[in-house]
Length: 308
Ligand SMILES: NC(=O)c1ccc[n+]([C@@H]2O[C@H](COP(=O)([O-])OP(=O)(O)OC[C@H]3O[C@@H](n4cnc5c(N)ncnc54)[C@H](OP(=O)(O)O)[C@@H]3O)[C@@H](O)[C@H]2O)c1
Image 1 (cartoon, rainbow, N blue to C red):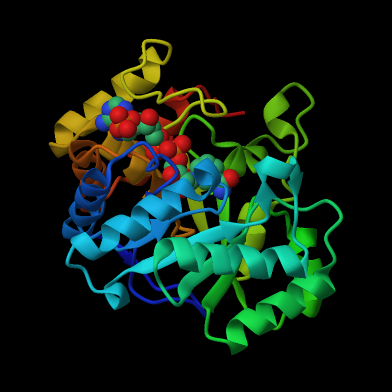
Image 2: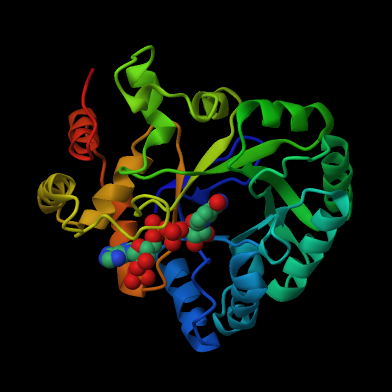
């Protein structure tokens, strides 16, 4: 498994992360199998959020983990706070951050989280409150590292004015089909295409400049939770290109789609959401593949981009 050293953050972490958003429907035994399978494949990083099925995903993980035989210290547990579906709001208040972390710890059956991320922005957040909450979580040993998800550069700057702890991750949507994270600079200053619209304040380059590790969420999905593009007849050219490289490398198309993300020099992690052990095994083969510069562009173009 490819590993990454996060500047000011955890070291030697797996480049592929097991996302746990789809864990709630599993039995405890099935969840234990998913966790154990990931671990055996070298995936030691697990991503949660307090909002995933209203805490049920964390609960299932917490109930299942003792059955895996894995030591707590051998994995990285990450959760995200601030997205409150039940209240129809985003909430980065000190009170909500502290309560949410306590809820996650209880459900996950652990006394610390390796990483806590602020989920999508609370539009009326007060950075001083976030700073107080993070200080308390850090001082108490409940949280070791901090970061954000779906957050733009100036919001990060505003947080950093007050927050003392380094913000070391930004979890962002990125797949070969949903590649808006990297598209805009290619078409900059071009009035004839939607690709030229800057939608995220150059968050990719900001993260690289500030040593923030990007975690790519939904790396196999098209659109916004529309299902996977792999083997999807709506993406014939992309599947043809993925298939050709996959055959040459002796791996699956999903492995190539993930290898395309890992090939980016930003040293991103890819968060895979499958609960199917065979699918995760296929995905992890990405770690064995080193795509050439040319491969990377051919795949990018096959996903519907063109060179200006
Ligand atoms: N920060 C955020 O805002 C945010 C938002 C969404 C998600 N996330 C995180 O990102 C993780 C991944 O999200 P995701 O589940 O949407 O991403 P994903 O891994 O891109 O998509 C998962 C889907 O792909 C399918 N799939 C995987 N391998 C396949 C294969 N070989 N053949 C056919 N289908 C395959 C899975 O089906 P099977 O189950 O059948 O394999 C599942 O339906 C989540 O668990 C969560 O941790 C974060």
